[in-house]
Image 1 (cartoon, rainbow, N blue to C red):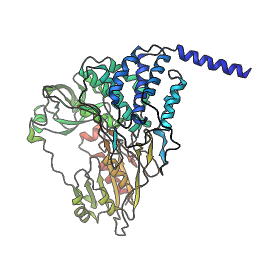
Image 2: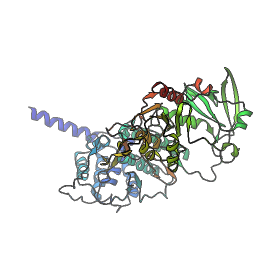
Image 3: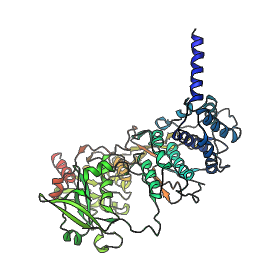
Image 4: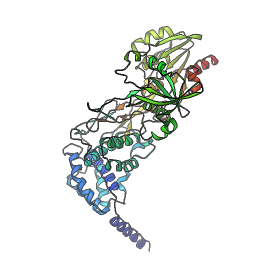
Length: 550
């Protein structure tokens, strides 16, 4: 009886498979996956011996005609067969590596709704006997970042549906196989492909294509990522900017820095002014509406990037609702191009790179300090009771030299994962831990304070991990940008670039920094009142902490 039931179940599955209709989106989603898999796995494709882009363009009309799962699966199976036999290997030489398995997923190969059993078996056979030669389409830097090779960009035209799909498939598969933090996305990456694909089919102009790509790129949830394109000479106006810098706090935009004294005085704008509306939209509404268009690893980075985005436009002015001293007014503010307007005003004020504050506290601006200046900095700050390393900026690479001064012995501060090009989609732990500091009995004996906030990104976060190994270190501030690892720059079609964090960066115990950022030991956030009073609340807390913990 059990045997009969088992046979009936098999028959029902086969009948369901053969009669199952398949939507256009499902067909294209699965085609994207099969195309990318064969591109990096099939020995007769991954070696570059076929024009793989052209093969996609040629098969799309056949896919469009497929009405059922049976039809579609047969097209895929015939496509695989047309690539020639795959030689079975007894075993692929094992490597002395340890995989980080959370990023790898080829489970779609075994789905039974739209793939026949035979197609799934053939794809699994290709996986087990995958290409082991020199990759044709991707290369790898010494650090582990991938870069594109031998891709044809010159013929891209957004007007052509097949080329738009090619651009989509190319980018999606790059992230699928070579993005180290795929497992940390808010949405599963295959779900994102399914949801954004209709946007690529409905494109009516170049802006539609750009928006479709941007919405896909944003879904990888990476502050390092973005979607950039070259502007043609006939594009018209460049972006113009407000004469101030702003941050977003409590659903409002607050003026935090004056960029043009002349314009700020003319329009009566001051630090601490609260902007509640921009071009007749409330800031809270803009925060809700822009989430699909701003790349960010976390909320802090999102608000930082959003403030920059909405402080500029392509017009000569911006309408703002501003509150100053409890008086709210509407102002039309002139905007400018940094490169040509009022250029003499936008030269950065020179700030001291390092100095001794009151109470014998040393201060170092990590965004200004050069490696060559570290010896003099050490000489001046060696006898202080504490050193504040301000990392709310992008440092200039002096962290190792500073760590040699701070640490009494070498300390591991980070370890990396890198993509295995011989097994696309898999990432392995690099053997060597990253070490900072040296044996130094004459190391710094005071407290070490590291200041961070949303402006602390990438190298700043990495350097902070390094400084945390100091003998008496404390991190003070707010959530950092959560984008660690060298940036991989991916020009996936002509004139379009979509970078991303290219290697996985973790603490030695495997704890993540991506998206989370550096978690402060003492959390301090800026406030509107603090900005209005001219305070640096994070720095003030650091000084208070030093005084109270002598």
